[in-house]
Amino acid sequence: MTIGDAAHGPDPEAKSTSKSFPWIREELILACELYFDHGCKRVDHNDPGVAALSTLLRSANYHTVDLSDHSFRSHFSVSRKTSDLHTAHPDYPAEKKRSNGGEPTARVVREFLADEAGMRAEAKRIRSSLTTTLHAAPLPANRTLLQIQNMRVHRAAGMPASLHKPIALLWALGRLARGEVPQVRWKQFRDEVGPLLEVFGHESSKVTLENPVWYLRTDKIWEVNGLTTPDDRAPSVSRLDAVNPMVGFTTEAAADLRRPDIRAAAVGYLLRRYFSHADQDALLARTRIAPDDATNVADTEVRIPGPRSTEGGVPPGRTSSTTTRFKRDPAFVRYLKGLYDDKCQICNSPMRSINGGSRSEGAHVRALKEGGPDSMDNLLVLCATHHVEFDGLAIHITDRGDVITTDTGEVEGHLTFMPGHSVNLDHLRYHRALCGRDEHPDVQRRPGQGQ
Image (cartoon, rainbow, N blue to C red; front, side):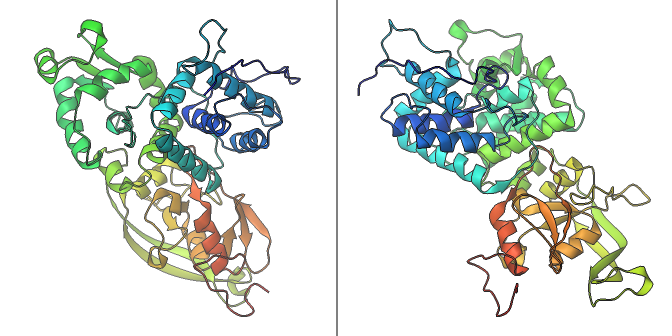
């Protein structure tokens, strides 16, 4: 394979935003996939693959950016990134000037060279998550969040990414969510994180607690105070036990992650990036990121789909009813309800009872009895009224997040999202098919439906 010159033409869009919005790992992996697709050569800005990746990244909501700035992740920006990847390749001539891709760019190139099949599988997962989810809230622009997104994670050839660091971070985020101090003694970290790694780590992965507690320091969000080692290598467990240093988030990272929006974005990113196929409910419960369990009991007067009537001031297509709901929320439901402060994603109405208890409800987009997963990307936080309307097919939601009245086609509102929460578009499509307003392979359209 020949690695040649990386020169590229001028960018007419002189006002670049690359300095304001550094490329995160997911973006770099997709760009590197494109680079390898072209035989490890810089890809011209006129290439169709560049255009497709530019469109995908501009719609990804990885960054809080005004998309009227057409230089953000433009064709030229994507092409320049393939040039950065090109000059980061080990075979690029040492005497030639390298681009300013930095270590994250070089790291992704090395990972592709070490395990191209595995990294292409990772690129496929990232691309799927971007094209199959509705996540209308961009992630906040924040240094700590960017460092978590670009976190170095050990990855042996043919193996998935190690979960040691992500699990340690979720444990530490759970402490901040409960208002606890960001640093603890090593032995407490060992005794609390060790069992989490046993349960949620990869089956073939050995529990090596010294590695995450030490190497999280390289991501600039973590500290180990009172201990040094030759060549900065991870200390042994016996050495850590003897010294028992303080370990945990840096002061700056802790200050950022105490902010609910930054912490929610970090939790959502870690769950989506590393634990998409894990038992997220159990993980949120064990790390105590979700609020403590509670039984939700509420007598609620709601509007449910019914005959066209205006009796008692009830709008046409609605009837009034009172229902008592006894519900024990799973951990991820409690987490999402707390994330939205018990406000409905459709009407934004606060839903709390007179004693301060939660009255918002977790609504599955595709019902569990119909094959829907019990996961956050299949859940909305709704008031009782809109929950019943959604389950009763009186309303449905478009891929853009518009809330549509099924019988009239009128736009009733628009879903609001918090950073870190997304909804799978396939589940929305399934629900629309039940309403007769879309097609889905798992829903058989009845004669005359949707006419």
